[in-house]
Image (cartoon, rainbow, N blue to C red):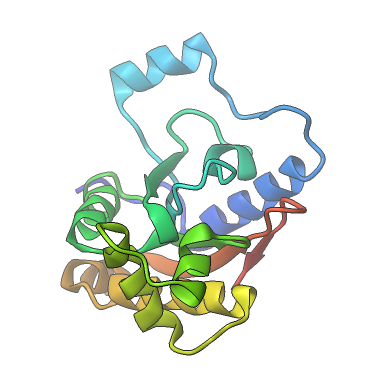
Length: 189
């Protein structure tokens, strides 16, 4: 297992500072240089945060947190729901890459949350909306529902035996956040 390069608290401060830069940026300031591409191809990746977020095309974690190559381990799925596939990816990044912080990042105006509140879709989408409905219950407010959905995903992650063990022994931390589509601001919960 890789040792954590920075603490979860330091990783969270990097995310907050990156989001502050993003709020006024015209372009993504993250390092994507040929030098860094070569460095990561030789030395591998060492992300400081795992971000589980929605597949929504307006939610781009590397931009939102002003991050470059190798800084974030991003897992995207509609509605930022968690199942065994996401847990396996999280466990890999936390235990093998030594990433100290897990962030479940929901967002305002989420189509999956809206579908869970206002409709009963069919097909594979139903797996996502049913999970969100479990998380939000009867909540009708978009922002509150988003927060409940983030909290539900956090609970699933924290009850994973591997993640729970890493929290206790390695200082791994799981937090929730909501990205505001209109302003670009991230509310850390």
